[in-house]
Length: 136
Figure 1 (cartoon, one colour):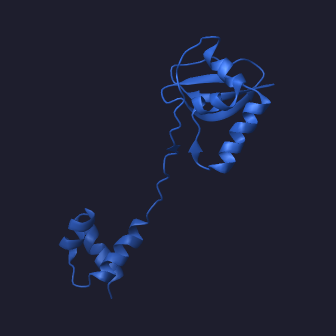
Figure 2 (spheres, rainbow, N blue to C red):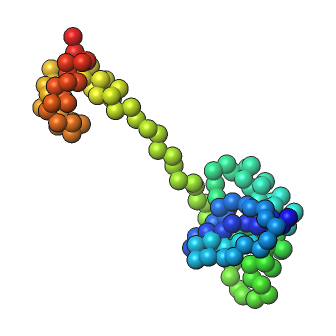
């Protein structure tokens, strides 16, 4: 089975590596570039050295002549490789809203239902229920 780099076409960033027995078709958003053992080694070394950092296909082309040949398909040009560093999208950590409201009520002991509603957009009925629940 052959291995392919999955490249996001608009950004030229390598998203992943797939191994398949057939040649996958390119789309508007993804391209598939045939990978050799040396280019896979260079890619995995980059991933190990820079966790969470996506690699540009141009940077891999400068390290591996096989990938350069696969991408350019015999065309010649004077394009130079720029090494830009892009991070993966940050994962949003969920916040427990009830704990946040409870701690806010503890730090604002004189707050009423209107203040709580203004701070968290709860509604007056829900704000009163939180005040009853978390205040003695």
